[in-house]
Image (tube, rainbow, N blue to C red; front, side):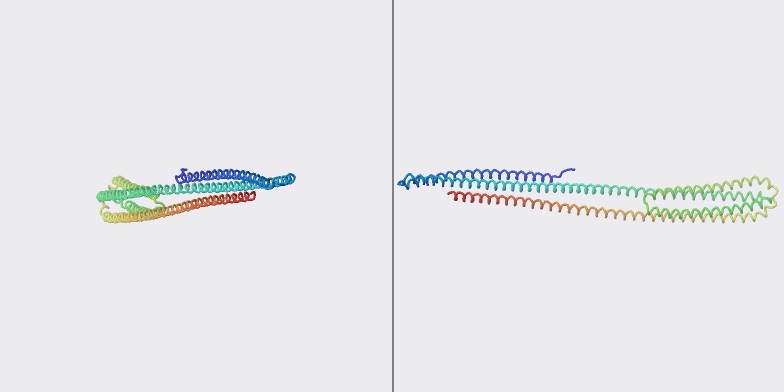
Length: 439
């Protein structure tokens, strides 16, 4: 974790305060030593002054009474010696008491100063540790918030890129799907047209051949086969149409649900659906090819039957009417198949239009989601900005508290200086009182 310059400045300030406290302690120690020296000097002066006064008194008493006898002088001298001894003892006791008082007050004052200085240092160190821990926590929170903001911005950019890529890929795939559908429709239409033309040509050739070749034995067999073939064709076409319609409806419903639920999987499912539809179209084309092959087999059978039906020329006239009816039925079936194919084309076009509408709806939903996501991002940024402002306000409050504590410390130091001055005054008063008592 990196240390901010504000914390470094705060450490420098703390070091300066500790140095100032050391200087104050040293100054107070030097002042106390000076006071002790001055007090000792004063005591020495008082002793010298007392000795001088006692000598002066002795000299004055001796000079005033020269006429007294030696006995009286001796008595007076003994009394004066006793008085001086008593005074000396009192003086010594007073000096001892004064020294004890001074030592007591000095020790008490020094212990009080040391206790207060230690308490101030402890409180200051505790407050310093608290501030350092708070600043470290705040810095870690700020770094975490900055990292969160950076991660959110990185995720937003990633999501935006993903959305853009999905939109581009979705558009490309839809264009490819539309082009594939159009190509499939065109190819299927061309195939159907070619098959219809071939069938028409084959029917014309068959009708001409039948008119010239079909005989009595072919009448019953051909009618039965044609009826069965028509029924089979109609049943197969109906079944295929119903199955294709059901598949289209079910696949469309499932595709819509899946597209609404998941945007990403919709593209894959559309590809699978297109592949399945292409397979269905290929199967349908293969089925038509099988039908065409069956027709070719019938043609081969007809060619084989030509040899057998050489004796049936008499029944051609009767069968012409039946052949015309069959041709009409074939035309009707062809028209029906063409109409069904057109219906399929219309349905497929409607489905394409529905897919386009769904695509527009999806694009609108994506835009709405983007707007909502941007709104959420703005809210997150606003919350982070409010948190940062709250942190700044808290930092300012802590700085104000720090200034208040510094002012309190300064006030405490001033109070202690005033106490020291008062104690010095008290000591001077006591010293003067002692001088007065001794004098």
